[in-house]
Length: 153
Image 1 (tube, one colour):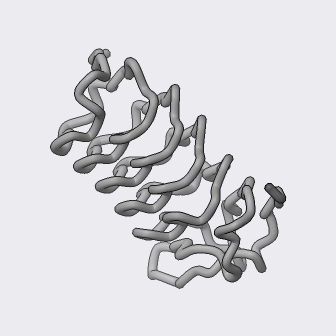
Image 2 (cartoon, one colour):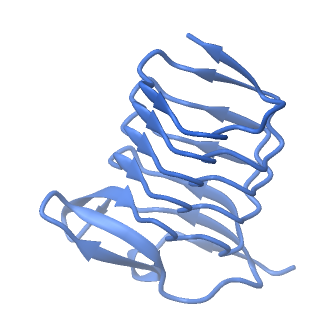
């Protein structure tokens, strides 16, 4: 399978909100290519504050770098890809429903900044255990598969 690394602002589609930029996906369809993506932290001088819902769903991602300016990861933003690991930056407060569902994740570190994890956020992966920090106030239904050992810290 062909591989491509995406790291240029011009490769991403986005929209402007009052607080900053929301990434909405790629400008090109990469579905039949293995994609490594580095999401920019700033676009046109404004911070990237969110990855929108469905932004990269089923887009062939094998690796993604999320900038530490992102506060929200929308519903199914990275769902149905081939991610094996992901680093969630310490700026993220909300992980939406299905945000990382149906990938190949074996390990995830949830930072102390996260307050909400949506329904099915990490379902259908290869996780065996996960540490959920005390900052998390809400965990949605089936956020993790039933066989995942959840530890609170």
